Amino acid sequence: MSVPGILLVLFTLIAGCSKTTQAMNTLQPPPDVTPAVAAELQKGNALFASRDWSGAEQAYRHTIVLDPSVAEAHYNLGVTLDRMGNPAEARKHYMEAANLAPGNKVIWDSPPLRSQQGGLQHDISKKSYQDPTYKGF
Picture 1 (cartoon, rainbow, N blue to C red):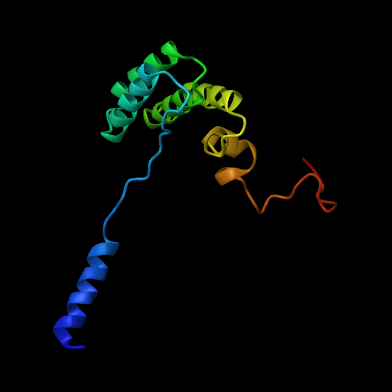
Picture 2 (cartoon, rainbow, N blue to C red):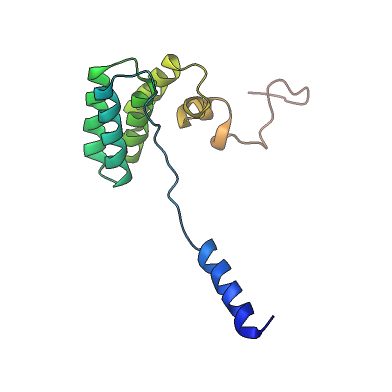
């Protein structure tokens, strides 16, 4: 292979690797909701993707008014409130989402639930009270 050919391949690989994709932090509407609820949740997702936190918050709150049983709306509102710096209220919506969708792994891996199970804040060097060498609280 010629030097220009090698350079072209390397440039293509580097350009392909440098593309950044924003992780999707919000959930899509479930298939069993009404079109109005789905549209409002999608509106909130679009506002969230454009980093319009207050607009997304309003859309998710309106979705919850339309159908309070949509776990995805509560989860998305929790994520939005977290981004806005309101973790106390966000936690309430994460918990409501978990109660409404007991089998949803994404919801159950949300920050408040994850931190209760160890999660990112878990200190692995701290001994468990179940460890026989643990000498105190």
